[in-house]
Image 1: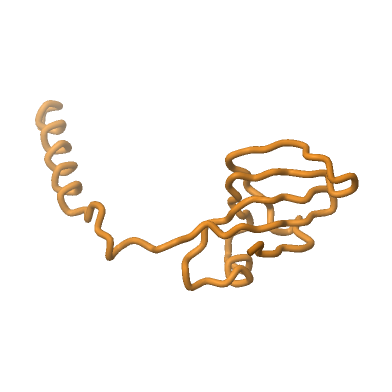
Image 2: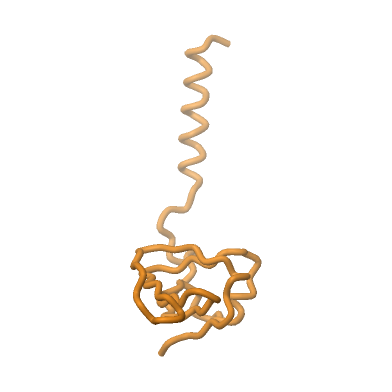
Length: 105
């Protein structure tokens, strides 16, 4: 098989794989919502949102297998004096650092 033939065979296999994918199928998506939360660690108070499935409780989400929690639109405060330290669009929080987690309604 020549190099050109291999490229053509690869392109054909890519096209077949793409055509077998379901694109934008609403029945395959998981509905999630932005859950406003506050996390307290030894040093920080983190206020932001986590995106969880509609039928999942915060406690169940926190007990999931991942070691990190993705938090969006996070504001990080010093826990001792309450001063705002910084704001970020995304932060990944290690679960074993969390002392208190609460949903804000």
